[in-house]
Length: 175
Image 1 (cartoon, one colour):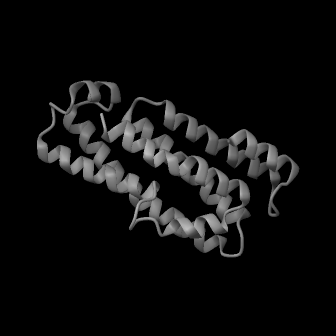
Image 2: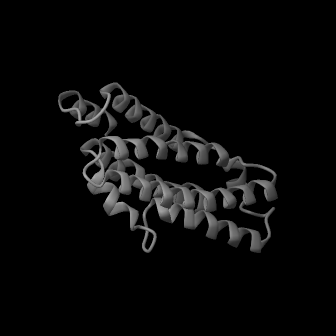
């Protein structure tokens, strides 16, 4: 999908500041996306997951439509608040279990964690991922972000970023 967006951008760059900055942000977004799907560590997953928010914010804020500034702020505030809650859940799991390794945690099946820690962590991570998936009632940032984003930003938001939240549910909460 990133290749198709890059090809589209080659022939039709969005109006706005530096085209080089636009391409660089799309590439940083792609790097964060690939890292999110490749890492096997909770903290690295979180860092890669959050890495895509920064370029998406700037794509919306600098190359978006009429309401781009308000939409970009709404996008970043919702997702950052969800990120804080998710980070607390990930830290709770890692610190209580003694590892952030996803494979080791899945193999252990939560035996090193009490039921209350498991429930608290699942709720915290679930809320954070629900913001990014986006699930009701934490989805109100999405319509503004889609309508304000440039075409490439909207395609990557719908085609990749929103799926990363669902992937987080499958990768972290199901095993």
